[in-house]
Length: 371
Image 1 (cartoon, rainbow, N blue to C red):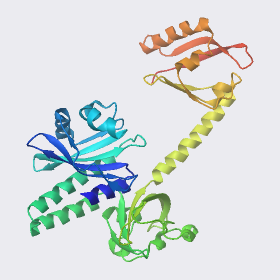
Image 2 (image 1 turned 180 degrees about the vertical axis):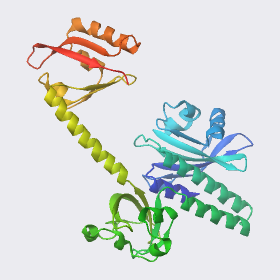
Image 3 (image 1 turned 30 degrees about the horizontal axis):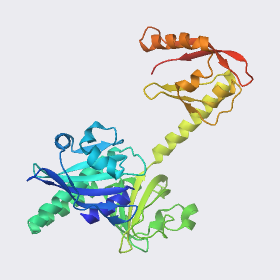
Image 4 (image 1 turned 135 degrees about the horizontal axis):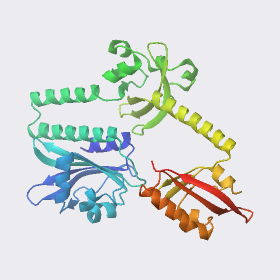
């Protein structure tokens, strides 16, 4: 369990990973191990928490609970005073560990330094780890019979081959020793072609001066995350997000995620934004987006330049906007906005006076539409 907590914290870039056992006798949770990535040490082992009945019900229903904001997520309120606030937790994700149909405990992932949005891949990884702990516990309780060992190996192989990312085990010399199914799919090569091949052979010629993915120098247990182009069997290239962790024996566990499509989408989005900016400048228009629930307004620089300003900050709130509107025009603008919110008008439209940097009031036609 310590190995699972330590490895998952390093590979997933987490602040803390801990495993808890449910004590059926007194209904408490006991911390079996807690790895702190900042200090690279284990602490809080033996910590006991009580009174979390609502939480147990939710985990039985959802299996994995992910709270991007642990302080405000109502599903985590059972632990707010006993764990979240004292430990300074900002985001947390918990996966239930089950032995058969009975709940055994939990594996918990914590973020302390910053909040985190938990992805579908994160949830799947947490669930897989919970299954792994479950199998490990059953195996140890039954003294690791041959049947249990075979099932465990089969499950590990299934998890490995069904992973959505390419996974490779590479020797200290850069030779590929093991691959999963996705590694073959993304590269276009058969497993027999990959095993025993040098990783350098899959790096485009122009990048080979950087060596094996440019990550030879990192130390054991310290994950490295970089974007790298990889050659494919059809003579093309694909952009991969590479996460590599050097193991204690010097081998490198490498996870490759295909981000070619994402990169192309980002490039297309940037080009689209550039065209929009040119069009707005040509039409002498400024734009703003108002996120109503958050009271957050994002304006482009052209919006400010129309009034003669050069704001460094483009994200503001409604109070900031009202500072530049003529006092007599605020209420009519709000009335027009509320009518649109209620669906009485197809769009928000108001003619208002706004204060320019020269101290003059300029007439502005302000339009918007709910999406």
